Length: 73
Ligand SMILES: [Zn+2]
Image (cartoon, rainbow, N blue to C red; front, top):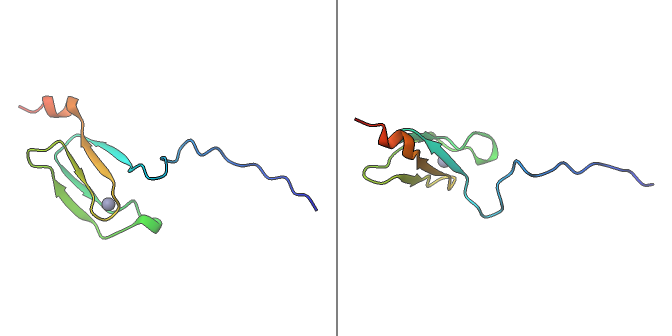
């Protein structure tokens, strides 16, 4: 019995082993893993003098948007 099923394109998924990058406009970011299987308690991170911070729970990388950073006065 042969059943045909379509394989949905995985273009929306990040590459395996590639941490998800999230562009943010402030150095202070909150992460809760986005819920679901990767969800975790909400935590706040402050980049300080850096321009990126990695979530210790879900390995997401928050990157400060250069355009937003240069707009700070
Ligand atoms: Zn996280």
